[in-house]
Image (cartoon, rainbow, N blue to C red; front, top):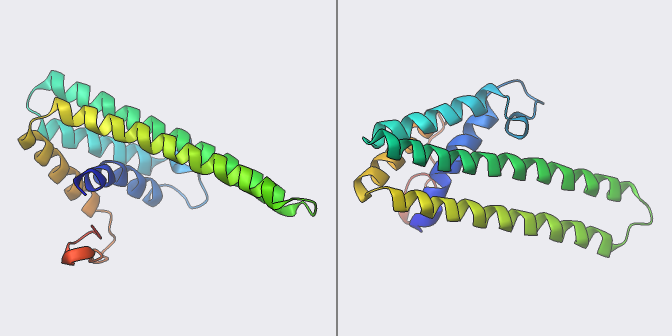
Length: 165
C-alpha cells in the first residue's frame, strides 16, 4: 500500500493543483501552461530541495519527478484524444460494440503503460534517497497537497486513515 500512497502523493499534488489553477475550461495539465500545473511542479521541486540536503541528489530526484510530470501530461493528452474518438464513434449510427471496445482497450492499455512507467520512476527515486529523505519528501508533498483541499475535510479511508488510504 505504500507504493500506491507514495505514487498518489507525487502525482496527486500535480493533479490537484492543475485542477485548481487557471480558468475553467482550459486544459491546464494537458498544455502544461496553466498556473496551477506550474505551481504544483514548483511545489514538488521545493519539497525535494527541502527534504534532500545534497544538491546534486536533489537535482537527480527533481529530474525524475519531471519525467513523471511529462508522462502525466502525455497521458492526459492521449486520454483526451481517445475520448474524442469515443464522442465521434458515439455519433455514428453504424458504430459497433467492437468499435467502442477497440478504443477502450487502447485507452486502458495506454493508462497501464503510463502507470507502469511512473511506478518505475517512483522506485528509481526511492533508490536515490535514504529512508529519512523519502519520508521528509513525502511529508513535504503531503503538506503542500493539503493546502489545496479548499477547506474540505480529508476523506476517511480504510482503517480510519485520512486521505482515503
